[in-house]
Amino acid sequence: MSLQLGANFPSRWLSAEKGVRQQFLRELNNVCVLLDPKTDFDEWKDDQLADPDHFVPEKTATPVKETVHHNDSSTKASLPIKTLVELEQKLLKQADAVIERALDPIRAELRTWIQEQIRQEIHAMEKQG
Image 1 (cartoon, rainbow, N blue to C red):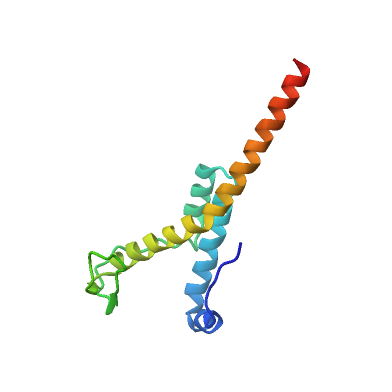
Image 2: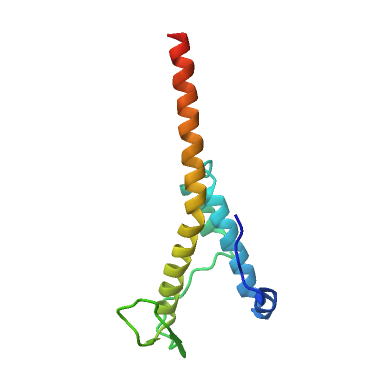
């Protein structure tokens, strides 16, 4: 599985502020840790809250001078995003959609592997019984 970041990703990445890049890498690491089936969520959450570098976004109403174009066919016009909270929510929804699309092939592969393991286990049980 590969992720297409675009030809200009290196320049966009390097033009981002250092704190933003560090936060992104921390969050990416958190996603990887949370995807590990051995991770204890409660322990992970406690560790995050104890971390002095843990970032908690402020829920301010700071205006954002940006317009987001919706791909929704029912809304053809561009709708302005008025606050950082709205921008954050929009970006998180988009990130969730990207994550779900990326996980689909992994789910299918895992499902196939599990089905094969079940078949092998049943076959072994039939031989014994």
